[in-house]
Each structure stands twice: as C-alpha cells, then as structure tokens.
Image 1 (tube, rainbow, N blue to C red):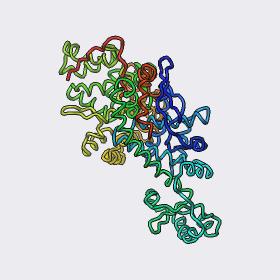
Image 2: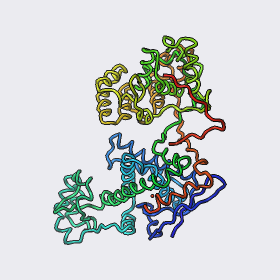
Image 3: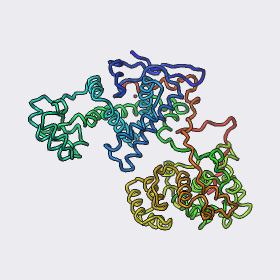
Image 4: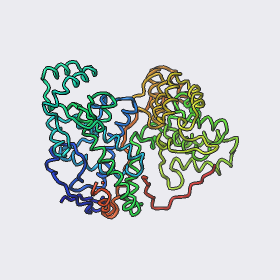
Amino acid sequence: MATFLAAGAVGGARKVLAEVQQPNRVHRSKVALSMYRDMPEGEIAIEEFERFAMDRLRVLKGIDDLKAKGFRVDQMQDKVIELYDKHMATAQREEKQRKDAVSHFVLRLAYCRTEDLRRWLISQECDLFKARFKDLPPRDQRVFMEANELPFRPLGRPDFEEVQEQLAQVLLSLGQAQQASALLNGKVPPESYYKVPFEQVPDLVASRRVYLQAGYAYVSKDQMSSLVVQPFRSALSKALVLTARRWAAVVAPAEADRLAPVVESLSQRYLGPDYSDAEKRGVAGTITARDIPVLSKSSFPLCMVSMQQALHDSHHLKHDGRMQLGLFLKGIGLPLEEAMRFWRTEMAAVAPGDKFDKQYAYNVRHNYGKEGNRKDYTPYTCAKIISSTPGVGQVHGCPYKTFSQESLRSALARLQVAPSNIEAAVGMAAAGNFQLACESAWEGKHGCACNTGINHPNQYFEESRKAIQAQQGPADPAAAVAAGGAAGGGAAAAASGTPKTPAPAAPAAPAAAAGGGGGATAQLQDVLGDSSRQQPQPDSAPPAKVQRTD
C-alpha cells in the first residue's frame, strides 16, 4: 500500500489523501511514460498542486494551438516533446515523474466536469502520450508494453511471410521505397510488425498507412504509438466519467469555498501575459483620449473597434460593454484621468455634466481600483469575451461569434483586411475557430504572419504596434502620426511596441485552498483513489456595492 499525502500551505500541516494499491510500481517506473493507473506517492503542497497543473496545462494548450494552426500529428512530434521538456522540467528524473503524475491527476479533477472539458483533455493527453511514446527507445517501448500488460504481440515468421509483399506495397504507397526494398530482401525481422483488430488503430486506417486483411491491421513498430494510445484513451475516458460523479457528490459541495474554486478555475485559466498593470509593463500614460480614434483604426481588434464605433455613434454602451472596452483601454496604457476624459466626451450627448458624474464616473474609477474594494481589474481575455452572450441592445462579446457572415465580411473590409484573409476569417468563424479567425484578420491587416497566435485583445494591440513599428522603422515620423503622436507624443511611445512580459497566471489563492492544513484535499481519495472559478479573496473590509447603470 502506498500513501499520497497533501501538505497544507498553513503551518505545514499534512493530511492523508489516499491509500491506493499500486502493483508493479518499481517495474513501471523504469520508463518515464505512464498509463496513470497509480496515484503518486509522497507529499504534495497546495502550491505544488496548482503549479504542477499549470505547467502541464501549458503543454496541453500548446498542443491544441499546434493543431489549430494546421499541424498534422506526424509534424508535431518534435514540437510536443520540446513543449513537454520546457514546462515539465525538474532537477531530478524522479521528481519529473512525480510532477508528471501529480499534474495529470489534478487536471483530471479540473476537466472532468463537462463533456466538452473531458473531450478536450482526452484529445490533448492522447497526443502528448503518443509523442512521448514515440520518443522512447525501442527497448523502453517494449518494457512499457510488458509492464502495463498491453495485449500486443509481434508477428511470427509464417504470418509475416504471408503478407510480406502486401506490407511492402503499403510502404511504396507512402513513398518509403528504401524501407520496402529492405522488407522484401529479408532485412526486416518479423517482430517489427504487429497484427491487431483494425478498430484499434482508426487513425492509421483512415490515413491508409496499414495493410488490412480479414478485419486485422498490420502495424509496424514505427506506428505503435497509434496502437498503444487506444488503451490509454479508453482508460482515461472511463476514469474521467467516474471522477466527475465523485467530484460532484463528494468534494465540490463540501469544498465550495476552498478547494473547488482552485480546481474549477484551472479549466478557465488564461496562460498568457498579464495585462492588468500598465505601470509594471511600462505602458501607463502612453495613450491619451485623443489617440483612441486613430489607434482604433490601426491596431484595435474587431471586438474593440465595434464597441468604440457603437459608443461614438450612440454615445452610450451598456454596463458589460463599458467594462470590456474600458478595461482594454486601461490595459493599453490609458490612465484614469484620460479615461474619464474619453468617456465624458463620448457620452456627453446622453450624459452631460453632473449626470455623467453621478451615473458613470464611479464605474470608470472602479475599473482602475479607485472605488469599492479597490481591486485591480484585469482586461478581458479572448476566452472570457467569447463565453459572453450579448443581449438586445448590447454590442460586447466576440464579433466572430455573434456577427452574421455578411456583417463580418463588411466589418473586416472596413478594417482594410486583405480579401483572401476576410474569406479565411469568415470560414474559421463559421467553424467555431474564433481566435484563429481573429488571427487571420490580424495577418490580413498587417501583411505579415502572427506567430504568437491571438489569445487576448491587448495582445492583438501590442503585436499590431510591433508590426507597424517594424514596417515603418523607428526614424519614420509617420510612426508618431499613426500612433496619434499629435496628442503630446503620448501614443508615439506606444508605437515603439512595448514588449510583452510573459508572466504565469496568478495562483488561485493557495493559502485559502489549503485552509486549515489541507483538510479539503483529504476528501479527494473518494474522487481519484481508484481511477482520480477562481474566486478572489475578500479584503478585510466588505466590498462596496458597484453601481451598475445601463
């Protein structure tokens, strides 16, 4: 029996998390890859609980981004291994295996709650598993299959000779003439191929990379990752369903204020740069109210262009729209005084003088942490914007999701996006790939590739400023004009392109999650033992009620 302990963040208290039967642990651990049938041994602090999960999430989201950009699985091998080594690296081999196991089980908790989350996790974990299996030396691959009792056996010589010519033909069809010649000349041993039911390798069958006969597929050792991943996929799928039931019944109700927010926030976590503090990123005060119309045309994403134009035309935005646009402007460097000037000017027709001060000024100051509980609000991410659903008379949200195809074409044409990119963006939006559509629009507007992808409106803006600066050159006076340099040279500083500062997502209140020595995590035995929103912490004073005026 092995014991998995959780160490609380407060006072170093520890609590037994689970006792799990772990057969063949020593034998299995000889190979770094795991089927995750066993819970990890030893202690884990709440801080590690979240940090390990975030590192693995960076790997999985990196894999998802590669697929979204059109990379095939066979093209992703080196990139996936590079991602894994970058984010899962530790000083010791044993510690890396422990981190791998702990992070996997934590993400099971975070992604078990809905069918969409489970499907996403299974897809990325399987791609990661395949890449790591292919990266193993042949001897370690055999050790892994034997240790995990996978029912795959190589061909005997009679069976191999019976299909030898057909196997060579498959290789020829794949353009592997040299391997086909070696096979026909007897230079390939029979144990290089496996005979399995065809339904166990659907991806190889679909791509016509195997020979089929009488319901069986003949799989070469180079393609074994597609075979080995099927038991892994099946086991993970069943474990996630079981975990979802136990999480809902056992842990979530009892830990609604401690562990549950930490776990549930993981599936919604933004992993890119932190745009909440313009001063730390060196862009505070670089934008003035007079710069906004020019910058909107040159560097705002479509979601912000749409709201800025609606505000200018109707002199009003509802609360959600003011929040989305206001926090974006704060993130690009618009200081509070200029924000007040911008909103007061744009809304003067419907909220002149005292009316603005009474109904709207509080909300602007609140966004900057100057009212209420003085929280430093963060600009909305693409994920948050996409998840919002604007009602009647509202213009916030993601246009790639909410606009009709014709409206989207017209809006992108007004942004001067290249026609080919407009059609590509419309097609991606129709397929539900809203961030890829935004990326295509960015590329069509700036005439260059966006290698970073688009995950945040403020990232779109900063990448736009960098691209414009690179095209115009630092000595080009047009750069200042394009950035609104007439306004005291404020936006000219922005035109130089403030470099993004990568920062990990802020921990979701680990001390609170640990509450009282990790007691919350003790109940995870019932959730993970047999298989397996981030809430802000209140200030000492109760938060003031935010005035909401539509």
